[in-house]
Image 1 (cartoon, rainbow, N blue to C red):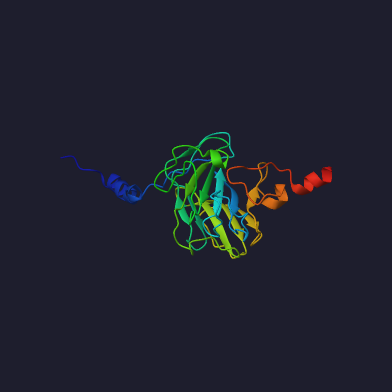
Image 2 (cartoon, rainbow, N blue to C red):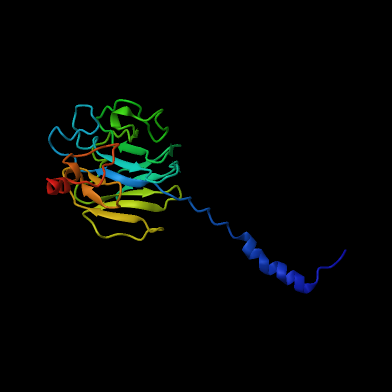
Length: 233
């Protein structure tokens, strides 16, 4: 039997630890979807009914909207939406967003949403005509305390690997270190309406300052604001 030279044996031994190291996980392909609207402070009056079931619920009518603002499809399977304390956590089932398509996730407590509605287990069978043809989901929540905080909270969109990619924050500045560098937008606590990202900017505005409406689940307005319209008059 041929003997391996001593020098060659040393090289083989030195290379062994490198071969034993686990492979790095593959990078998640870009682009990512974006958080385009958050309705975390439901007004006390009957106008706070974005689910359109005729009943205002301060928890069930909360919603988060995300959208594909890019020019190619995005597979959102495994993306997660969550708040600061883990009261709200939702992982999307298998679904691909075409360019311009929108998703609306309702809290769902004490609400009846008409049209196709999905859950964490399965995407809806079609886009919902009652919400500007958005893909509509519900948490199916039954607990009163499973809600976004009006004064101090955040909504985080994370990719399937768990890396935050987009974040909306209100009432707090103590940001922890994340494994990625998410985009962060700071908004006003308890606004009495949704906060909305207009199409051509990363900024989120009070919805009432855009067009006077309290919210618009499934529809992303252009940048023309109420103030702009008044200036033109």
